Length: 222
Image (cartoon, rainbow, N blue to C red; front, side, top):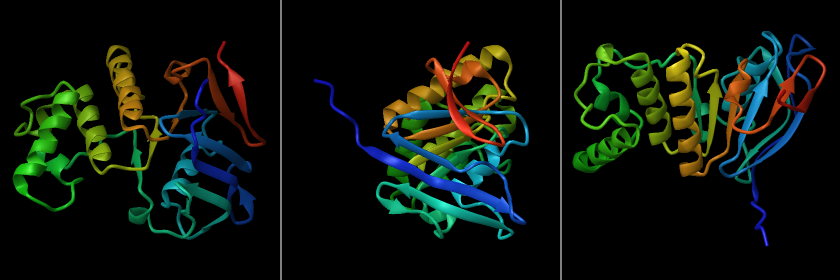
């Protein structure tokens, strides 16, 4: 008998408005632990605005209605740092004045230095970057920078991962490798994730969610 996974993340009739105009249609979804939701749609349909609303980074000029619930806690009104949500952008946003280890340590809480460095080493090894602790981030390839950036997000132990077209700046070969790495990390951490994209190859199964100005619906990949 298949065990049904409990829902850990919900959007309940969520909508964002600017000057009274809806940025994206009213959205209701449910995700279980380790589940990835891929959201696709044309530019300007509100994909990135949806992620910003969930992360809590929408500006004060926006009006939010509906509920955002993560592990039975309503996130509405909470500051970004209190939500337990990590967001990965197209750009890696690594700190150029810090080496690889310094960038990763930034995500870890204060504690025993040896233990923190051990966690950094483990993370790098999981990404095929063992021994990269002292590397200058300027010397990393695009794919390596992307992995370090994602590791930094994951080391903060988020309860939900948001991905804003994280593969779009990589070439085709790097994109496939990094895509599989991301999907594996989501499964290993057993956290829900939402990925917005223009590329149907970013869907790990045969379905995705299409966001338009009028609605959000599930579609099958051609």
